Image (cartoon, rainbow, N blue to C red; front, side, top):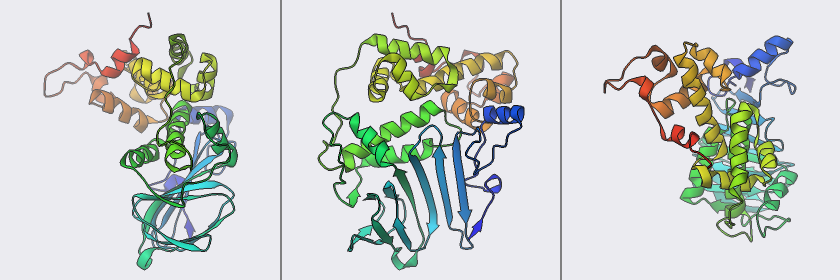
Length: 345
């Protein structure tokens, strides 16, 4: 297998956050893959073999105890004994899987659930290549997720080794695979993982209800305090800190904030940053500098969120150009901005 330098890899090359680049330049440090002390948040590594099998790993300093593996175009036989709990989500891969001496079948729409120190052997059907994702997490992290769920057991067991995913759960997994990227903020990474953990706990763990128990929301003053923090402390605040300052658990913080404002905290944070970005762009600040000052991981991350919200790129907005509809860019508004401007009074 040929190991490819991440900086030259097309599909899994890490995008180094602009803020991290600036810190690295100031300190003279390196922000390269494999350096555990690097200032970058998400570490991505990958390898390609001669048959174009692509294996990548994603880890974040913001989500300790968790990592994700991407396997694309893989036709190898997998023999795995992991020290971690893991869930394999089959995308296009299918074939027989030996688990504890029993042979079962993996296929798209299903997941493989395994506990630490158990042998799993998987061989692709007909030696045809396929793709899948693997979510790996420590026992301590799984117990932490369970401790925040009412009535959960602290001795988790999977309902079955191979389980079918509901359409809703499948959509949540797919969303997470897209969201867990280098340019995302610590708040977003932690929030996305926590929301996915709830899906995994209630969909895949034995003895858990199919849906999370929804308790009465905490006082509005807790969500108001969270909102203040998002405005005052910039893009570096994470979910742990936000929940602690509001006197809530992480799950309470996510649910209560979304119930009050219509968006989870990380999406609200992005809306705030986009509002700041529009102001700076209208003042003539270059888009690349605006991305850095507003806490976006890189220029493409900034462009993607700006266009998703406003329908145009930051450069078009900065130039003051008009769409074919004739609407002035300066007059653009969005639901996200209206939520940000909503009063707590």
